[in-house]
Each structure stands twice: as C-alpha cells, then as structure tokens.
Image (cartoon, rainbow, N blue to C red; front, top):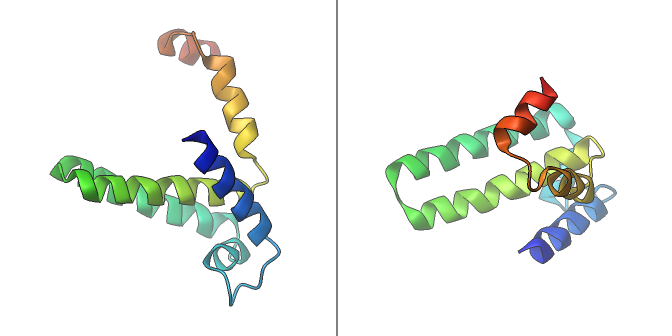
Length: 104
C-alpha cells in the first residue's frame, strides 16, 4: 500500500512542473494551495457520504480520490509523504488520547 502512495506522491511532485493544460494535477497545483485544500475537502465529504450509505465500492473509489487529493494538497504546501509517514512513525505506540493531550 505505501508503495502505491509513494509512487503517487512522486508522480504528483513531478507534475508540479508539468503543463496545466496537459495534466489535471498540474492544473490543480497551478490554482494554488487554497484550491487544492478545497478540492480535498470536497472529496472527503463525498467519501463520508458513501461511508454513511454503506456502498463499499463507491467508498473505495472515493477513498482513493481522498488520498490523491490529500497528496496534492500536501504538495501544494511542500509537505512530503515522507514527512507525514515520519510523523506517523513518531506517534506509533502512543495512545491517541495521550498524543492529543501532548499537543494540547
């Protein structure tokens, strides 16, 4: 799984310099971080709707869209997948309650 996300993140990074007329990713990135964040939010809502409906196939499709748009949003702010994975590694083995309290 992480391998697919790593490949996708690398593709998104490469598309930063692509022609926005030839790449959906480049077009999104050219619109700026705010538009990328807005699109991520839209896709997250669509995934929530499918989760509530209980349609596993549609939820799977929407979840893939969410992951893609999350990576685009991160790239728009120069946050790498590796940085996010490092943060997850740092949190591993820590209770969610304790981790949240530490951020307090």
